[in-house]
Image 1: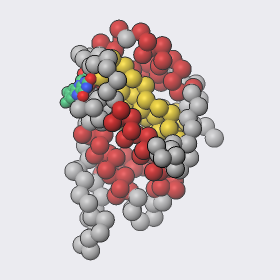
Image 2: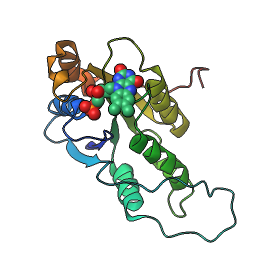
Image 3: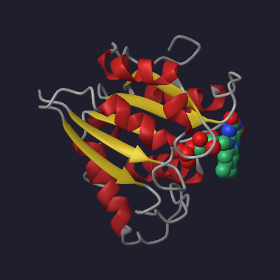
Image 4: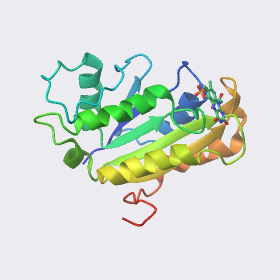
Length: 192
Ligand SMILES: Cc1cc2nc3c(=O)[nH]c(=O)nc-3n(C[C@H](O)[C@H](O)[C@H](O)COP(=O)(O)O)c2cc1C
């Protein structure tokens, strides 16, 4: 099956370090691999409302929710490109993940079964060189495990102001082979 990568940009600014790093990694993808790039800031989702256990009438789905769900379902490889904000993903990224909970219950869409076996990847820029991205990595790994997805890990790069990550030569080197790595089925820490 030919691969289709969906890059979801989670920064609250354009042309930031995370996107620069993700584009460096994407440059290495073979030409027959389709790439689609969507900025979550430019396609804002409404705040997630937990209606899982309510009895109220269904609401029409927001157009960006439909767009993002369909783009997600069309991808063989989903790349969450979110900078590190307070040790975790950004708000637009978290909101996107929260909407998975709605999509898991969308009639006619077997979201979990459809996502099982596909691959989740992460790309993130952070200001500090200290190893503090654990919450973000855990969020992505555990979400992939919950969905029965593969997890390719998180490509990390350092930088504060836009462009800084281009000085992180180790990150740029890792970007060259990042998407060529094996992506095993994601597991929770308990081994499940
Ligand atoms: C709201 C906010 C929270 C941040 N939290 C962290 C953090 O927890 N750890 C860190 O190293 N850098 C943190 N940073 C710095 C960003 O991760 C860094 O500037 C990164 O390069 C931004 O990525 P971008 O250029 O793709 O937007 C934070 C920045 C903002 C605006």
